[in-house]
Length: 449
Picture 1 (cartoon, rainbow, N blue to C red):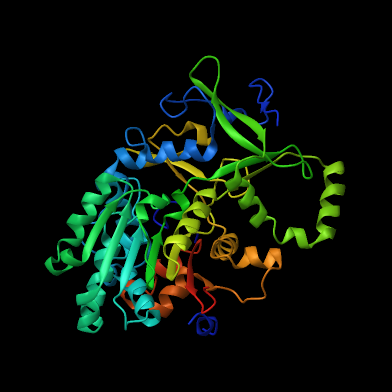
Picture 2 (picture 1 turned 90 degrees about the vertical axis):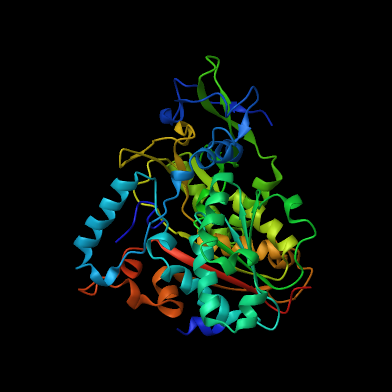
């Protein structure tokens, strides 16, 4: 089963240890990209798509996450899966929970608490160097359920000194969610002295100060899907890519797209990484050239530039970090055009509504993207410095990261306790309903210099 909502959102494991083009509204290939929108997001000058998305989600006054602490659901108590008959009964129970709370979505770590967080904690304990104080950073900690679950597990299962000396830092951009996290973790008094929230943007270098030179862990659950993305456009399969900007039309209320030649360095680097493998296959380039003459068509591609910026900062400030990230690998029923296109969805009176355009987001809609995990892996290697050296042929040094991509079910079967989320008839929503989510694990090698 493929989850299409936010409720989604081995042998391999041994290895792990310059003139802009304006869009004419009357001739646009994408008429749905013209939308009425709050003028607070786009000012007098055009903005890159990533800046538009960042404002729509995180603007302090008008952003989706900034003004809606209820955008992330909190269950009053854990679901007792062993008392549920099967899938039909579980879906009915889930529907009841959503209607009662009328919130936008429950994260997997919330639906399967505490077991989901316990699986992550077990993965950390198996691979961490426990001879040094354990330090964990969680980016986008939601309601604090993951932090509390991990700290609970370590308190109960790790040597006493590990728990007593640990530090857990939540880096949260939303003030309202930051407060909820403090309250959630504070339910266990001994956690409070080891936990703190830093209310800031994790992608901004200044917030990290001098960084952390000791080994540490970084956790990102359902974070990559909400990071700002850029959009690039090409007239056909072989025409050069162009940046997409958003601007106001003359009526001051309508937004449209503006295409400019590539200049932004972040977009340029991301395209370079994306096309790294294509550069090594000349035959594919010839095939695209022939195909474009026979069947010319425009191309649109979404780039995870927000992810790239974040990883650049993390590798710079936390050079010895180990990373655990989980997110959607695929989103069904996406209406918006383009490779890796997002879902733009809002919820009202218990019902979801999907928009046809990202420009329709008015601060009341979630904008979330699928994660291309193979591209994520290449970005990780690039930001560590290894892929860059490989392309420059300046070093024969090995990879600086050991990485592995696992289906969520494989991760939880290895590190979690799947029996705790199994219903009476054997149905297990944690293993059976999350076919479009994956985990990405990345740890440093000895080639870190």
